[in-house]
Length: 318
Ligand SMILES: C[S@@+](CC[C@H](N)C(=O)[O-])C[C@H]1O[C@@H](n2cnc3c(N)ncnc32)[C@H](O)[C@@H]1O
Image 1 (tube, helix red, strand yellow):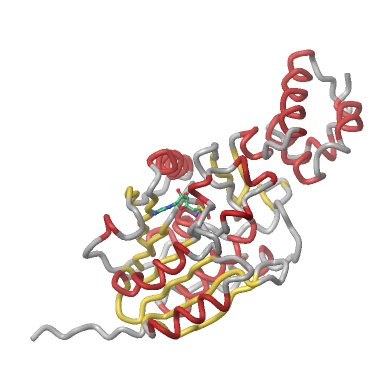
Image 2 (cartoon, rainbow, N blue to C red):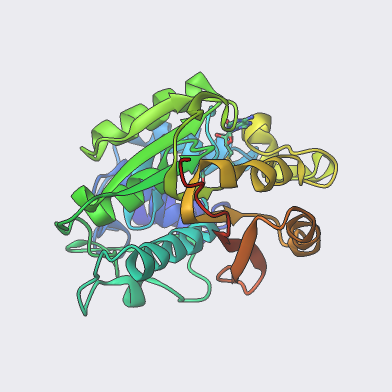
């Protein structure tokens, strides 16, 4: 059978971007979908593709079936112990990079690739080109001066930690923590894959980070209401999603404690659900520990989180 025949039998089953991703990964060829449809498939390949198609039809996410996902122009290993990184979280990373650049004096060169990467409005996955991924940010610039200290809290596959570490390289020292040992194993193998040094910690929120202070904490914690976990979300780890009835359980705890782990005027960037602006606002009003810098919207224009700046002054030793 020719690949084009298999595609025409299968394209009603996959979304277009998932089908392209599958073929790109399966054949390890970025151009396969556009240029190689005439190649012949042997029985073994057809069997493997059909197996993936069957599981996909039942609802399994393509990222778990392939063991990887593309995120922020990079490839991350994933398995059923971690959330599949979402393109919405790329917005959080862009914001973190902007904040680090503007407030911690890590300069970005004129053309740093972020503007071409961002704001296409609807991209689910980047598509491949000859150099790699279209519009991928310019990773790996050397920066001089004291490194910024960043924590990725609730790191999962460490997609946030690694993307930012790769972006600023030696300009940043990155810690990443998660309660799940299995998630930390995935994070470790992603750090190895990307050849970056990340300090990984098993920690229930801040418990294993006592005494540490960061310039910036970035977190994509669980924030789904227990009744909203349905459809394909059921394939992902419940521990990565569920946050009480209203989805606010972890966000509230983080807002109430993060200032203790921030340097003076340090930043907290937190991803949240589309309906969390009001509850976040009311916690912030009560705690009074932060200045609101910016409410964040995702590519679809939905509310997606907030950038906060600690207003706690350092105590001068007596
Ligand atoms: C929404 S996932 C985020 C994963 C990753 N940062 C991302 O953006 O794809 C939330 C993560 O929080 C972790 N988690 C759940 N409860 C936690 C807790 N009490 N302390 C620390 N991490 C926790 C889960 O294991 C999961 O990896």
